[in-house]
Length: 94
Image 1 (cartoon, rainbow, N blue to C red):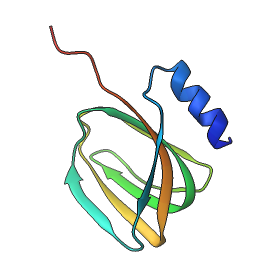
Image 2 (image 1 turned 180 degrees about the vertical axis):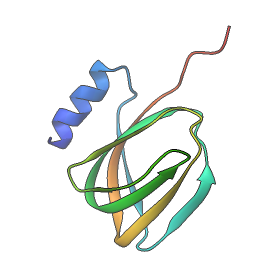
Image 3 (image 1 turned 30 degrees about the vertical axis):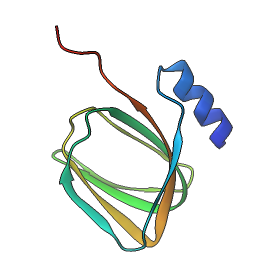
Image 4 (image 1 turned 135 degrees about the horizontal axis):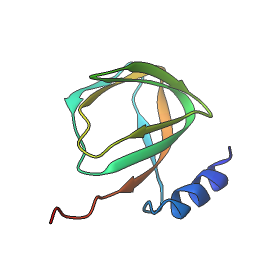
């Protein structure tokens, strides 16, 4: 999937326009959550994402998807990671 195709998919699914994120080599971000749903296409490098129920390495060309509020940790590969990410904020609770 190309970045353009991914951006079109995000738009169809109601995500905000994607932004490119670059993370440092061999870095990490410990347990945290986001107030938005995130869907990302890996452009280069790799990232390992650990949640309460799974742990997986995503490489160039693969897509990861996290629900809003889902606790997770991120571990960046030896060459770092760059990804294109779309965000979708859930509607306020009624």
